Amino acid sequence: MTISDFKSFYNEHEAFVRKSLYYIIKNTGFVDDVVQEVFVKVWKKQNSFKEQANVRTWLYRITVNCALDHLRKNKKRLANTNLEDLPELPSEESNSLHMRQLIKLAIDQLDDKSKPLFVLYYINEVPQANIALALKVPIGTVKSRLNKARTIVTDYLKTQGVNYES
Image 1: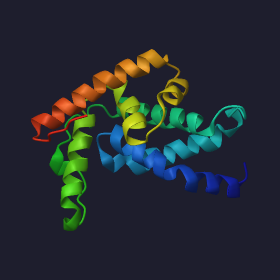
Image 2: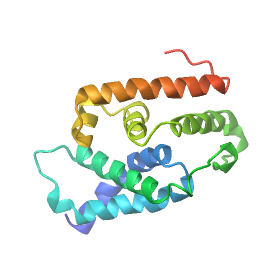
Image 3: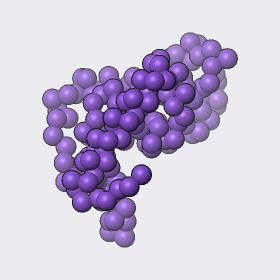
């Protein structure tokens, strides 16, 4: 991969990586660092990519691994995130911001195994089969964890006054 190819790859996939990390990592102040870490690993591991594999699946795996590594390394520092710790957006977006913050806090209720699955499926709309392939877990495990995660998230949102019906 040339530098030009890498820049194109980065431009094409950076938003997906950033969006995934925003919801997986509790403290959004670290997202930029972990995005950088993901793309450094992509650059270093580009020779490990097998042409017959899907590049998005490969990238999902690297992104989730970097997020989980970050969470493990920073578990104590990231223990207590609340609404006030999340970044503010301009006031005309306050309703949207409030909902995004509530969703992020709801996702933060999930364990480290369920959180990446939930983000990939519900936030980034990655098919369950691709998630199973990327994370190297059976499709039944993906379905089971997603069901449990969805229940936890919707229950949390209900406690915050959000009436969500599927």
